[in-house]
Image 1 (cartoon, rainbow, N blue to C red):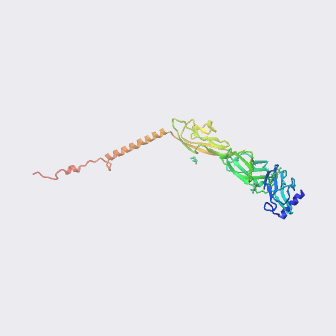
Image 2 (cartoon, helix red, strand yellow):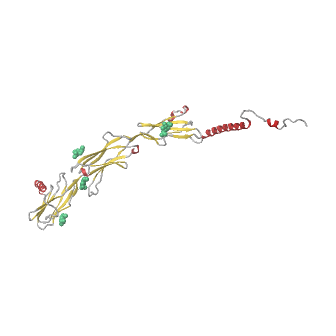
Image 3 (spheres, protein in one colour):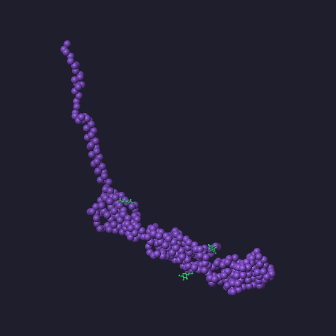
Length: 354
Ligand SMILES: *[C@@H]1O[C@H](CO)[C@@H](O)[C@H](O)[C@H]1NC(C)=O
Ligand SMILES: *[C@@H]1O[C@H](CO)[C@@H](O)[C@H](O)[C@H]1NC(C)=O
Ligand SMILES: *[C@@H]1O[C@H](CO)[C@@H](O)[C@H](O)[C@H]1NC(C)=O
Ligand SMILES: *[C@@H]1O[C@H](CO)[C@@H](O)[C@H](O)[C@H]1NC(C)=O
């Protein structure tokens, strides 16, 4: 083990040229490794040089050397987090030595991903900001992790981490979110993905449990806010005050006429008044978050209008008739007149007898 560490220090200091371009013609296969903690990985170190003295591989797990061939092969189990990259070395007959280390990334999927609200549990209030926290336990390496949080079919938060540590860490990600009544009943959940290139096949994302979002909101009417209706002889008057809200709204009604007041309509969303009269009806839907009032303007039945119009029309006609008659028989002076002058003019003025 000591020898291994000294070798690393030597490598760092001497800066010996490595790789196929050197006279050693060193080859390492694979050129880099991504391995899951607990698994093992193979490494083959070889040389195509003729003047080869030995090929060797140094690792904390085992060190091997071959003076009788052109390669060494080792399967290295990853059982510890202080994995040091294995080093391949070639010694030539000339005394020259070449070294190359194998870059190894060890990963570990998170043990768990959990979602919580630090400032309380239970329902949220529409329009208010809430902080949600995601805890990712025991994952490595941090910088290849991304967390994604979903609200229904929408992604509401994504984060990656700058943390450089290569050993397992606990990560926390948090975000603020505002919900509306449309979010009531949707699920919130987060997942952690490990992103590698090339991708590791069949590496599943780790999902948190889902939390059902309960959103408290002021009642809103399902039908238009105010309504104008007309009484008609054939149909029953129906006032629809249905509202959506959480908690479930309670209803109260106000009638235009005292005679209609009764307790039987308490907390009904839809009402068919037993005494149908015109006027303005009011309904209030309320819950812990607030209340809304809806006005129903109920107009008298069509028939009454026709009668009134006929009456008014009759009076107008009568007035007009009287007026026209007046034009024919009455002078501007207001007296009846006959002309007498013309009758007198027709006579000879003064003619004596001949
Ligand atoms: C190691 O690599 C050399 C050269 O490419 C090859 O000849 C040898 O078969 C490989 N050994 C193993 C065990 O893969
Ligand atoms: C992560 O959290 C768990 C539980 O709180 C703790 O036991 C563990 O030591 C933590 N790991 C690190 C790397 O801090
Ligand atoms: C891990 O993430 C870093 C930073 O995003 C990236 O450069 C590196 O290639 C990743 N590792 C692997 C094995 O894909
Ligand atoms: C409904 O009618 C009331 C009373 O006339 C009025 O104050 C209110 O603004 C109306 N609301 C809407 C949405 O038209």
